[in-house]
Length: 336
Image 1 (cartoon, helix red, strand yellow):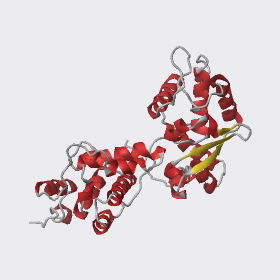
Image 2 (cartoon, one colour):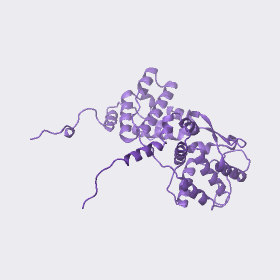
Image 3 (tube, helix red, strand yellow):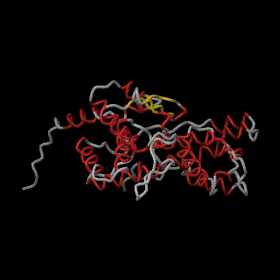
Image 4 (cartoon, one colour):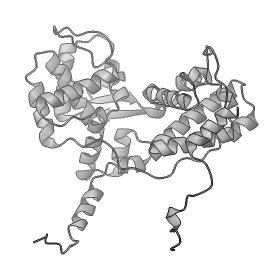
């Protein structure tokens, strides 16, 4: 009789993340939800202190954490009762479900909320420091999404050219800025007319971490923006505005979902594969690096805090790996 192989033997040790959370709930080790939602919770205080471009994502992160803790609303969670075992169980559960970057973003939201609870006097310093002392997840994943090719951009702008004015001018400016400006979706809709210096072709944008940067538009992007401004008019307010089906320009801000939906609609009309606002940003980074623009400049244009983030959009390394793989000869000729 052969002995079982090592990997066939059930492993003993730490329970799964889900079991850890379940055990915590059953033993009462997990915090008890607050009912009803408190009027000013640490979760709300944390989100309110973020830059506008970060609020949506981190508010969604807190909803996900609240659900893992058994609540349907982050305001119902007594965050000040979080303990290190609970944090460890949350980290383990998230690591089973999500990519490392997502796990670290969720843990960042948790740390920020714990800090808000401590600043509000709901936690003492020792409890706060113990709960927030959790290591981030290690590892990385290939970037999701895709790059939009040059011929695809041509098809898109040709299709937009068939639209009636002023939808044509608005959509042209929208797509041109999404690509040539490399804006995040929240940054794009937050732009105001006052942020644009027409003489310099410079747009002032406030991005993640409340960091301000300058984005310059030139060539076709500048022409597209100026065509839209002639239709939009000089009234103060958002730079990009909704246009209703009757062709009336409405003096209110676009939503992030509207931008996302509009790009998908235009892609379908133009017969190109669907792409997201972030794919425009990814395309700009890759195209600039392909053209020989240095990494630090592309990082500054996109408003990345770390050059490592920008480097993930560098397609040159992937091409080198593909070319190297073509040098590997496998002597397989098929079955006869």
